[in-house]
Image (tube, rainbow, N blue to C red):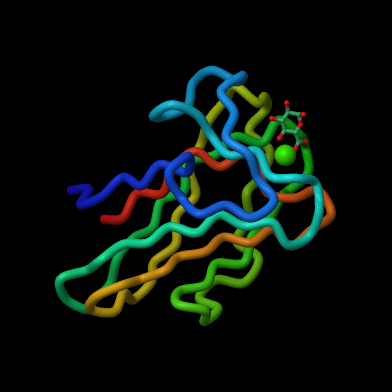
Length: 128
Ligand code: GCU
Ligand code: CA
């Protein structure tokens, strides 16, 4: 089961703001990043032991263009250009998953936009 839902609105943000104008999000809002390369959302999770975990990112992308992010764990790239494809509307939320190996203790999971469009609107990170 889900060991942790980490809302994007509680994460560390660079070049992003919490908004709530597109209904359907989890929690109290989502993060709207600026349309540029480099904005990120960084979540911290403390794992009691090292091991494989599935990351599930909740998001919406009301455009037709993929808005990939690089996923790093404690600064190391673990997913290159993870796709966040169009969901049809800013109010239509979907998920994308990635399997990673967490370390015991602190894991800083950062999703950084890699195209000039910025990231999709990021809603949450589930860690299972
Ligand atoms: C619109 C939308 C935002 C979204 C932005 C974008 O402005 O309302 O929620 O983040 O487009 O293209 O990134
Ligand atoms: Ca945006």
